Image (cartoon, rainbow, N blue to C red; front, side, top):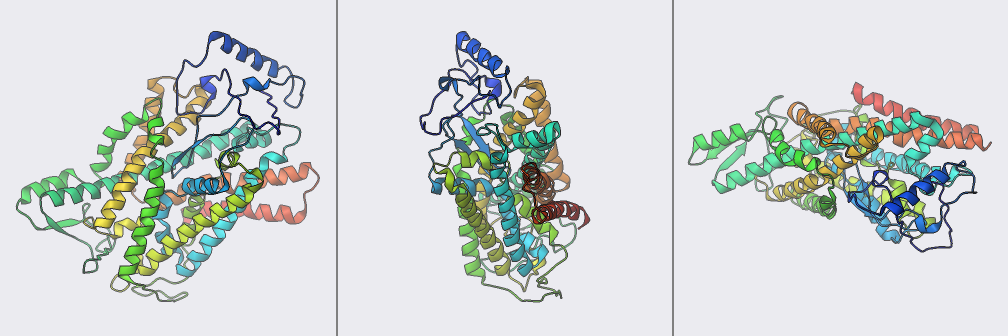
Length: 538
């Protein structure tokens, strides 16, 4: 529909009809309007197709403009936010709220793998890469925000970035953006399943040992004392699945039976199916969106945990640029692309940044607010990654012991880590149905024109997604690897290629393309391609 907005009119107009099949919403109340209103809506759609979008002869009146009052924006590895905006494009959020929303949306499970990524890249080069990747992804995000305004003669005020891709690249842009969006969503859901299995296993283990007054010691090297740190990957290349042995208890048979039925990779990932698969089949997961504040609480608690642990453990650093010893890693390592893959997803917000900034009250501050949000996200990643790496007790343990999920470096009976796992487990169990809902909306609506064509279609899709999560948790429970592969794949399109190509094409069409601009943006595209290829070589 060719909808024109009056910039002087700040008044929100509610529509008298919006077809449910055209709304991406977590509220699926089907009976919305009367038959008369539905008929009027169809006539408006008919009139809007009589002329080209650039023709202003037929413009829908203001009182039938759709008001997106129930739209949710989802982060691939984070939380969900309700966007309350007016149809004239003006939001009501202050800059502080907008900055916080972007920070909270971008902060996801990648934060758990940042210390591991720094270890893979080397301490100094890891810090430099976090800064450089933050600046590069911020620039590409800036290009996404500006992409709509570079399209002439068409009202793009309601467009998202996939619409821009479709304008420039046709059906290829539409379907490829859908493909890479699904990669990011399914990748996020797989990471969630692996982490939920991990957190559920450690939580159940802690509760069982506490109830039965069982003292266990992990079959892995670790430090002594009250602030114990362990190295799960050190004892052997294939340590026992449950990684613990009974130190003293009254019932050996019961403990062994529990260990057999409560296994991190062989049983626990399957237990989650009974809880999460039914939730994925719900038509409206709006109830779970109410818990998005848990994402903020979880990140804040992780920062608190890192600070307390570092204060107790102290700083353990030694600088060697290229030589490696038994306890420390070089400042620069050839494995650094593994960190860039993780960071591509850690700084990924490009598919929903336009919607978040549309709700900013002062649109002229969008670039400033986006830059501040990126600065805060980078600062959070730096703080957690640097503090965990620097305080990791070397010696007696090697820095190579830092796990892809740094919470695995704390034993299951550690109280602070237990609380963190509880927070993260509950948060992920509430966000997981929302991510599944968004995947269902994008895929099924594209093929069938309906986000819920039938329970059979939805069940097949959800079984496939859950099956991928269970398979990864069973055979490849490495969240760092999953994050870097999915991040480099979806980042190639949404972060590096599309923003740069669209900017170059728009400059070329306007006759403003210069050689420096062309070379710089081709270099950005090549960086994204090299980032993806390197993930499979290292």
